[in-house]
Length: 129
Image 1 (cartoon, rainbow, N blue to C red):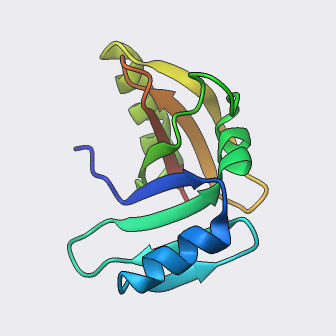
Image 2: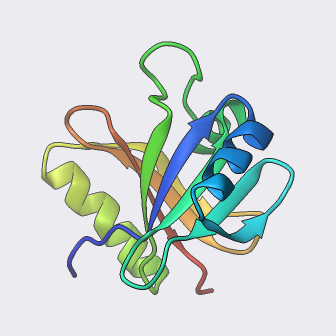
């Protein structure tokens, strides 16, 4: 399995302002909820996601203050729970660390977070049951 970036998520202080900015750049809204907006950037590009800063930090299980959350995370969406667990294991083997153990999500998916050796966050999510 090779690592792919499916979405780039940016933690933002003001979701409405950020949404307006990216719409102004011609980004097409794919999903729009109270705390989250995602944009389709065209074929061959990852999605761009905007998530309220505090909510994004809480999702990863890290502090929104200091070095715990840097305002962005990379997302990878494999097709099975086994692949999520494998990616977390591979991250640890490569010198990273599990930030949030993989577990079922209330929205029906399964996800966990790891950080690379420099502390950048990756969320590994599957929607498969």
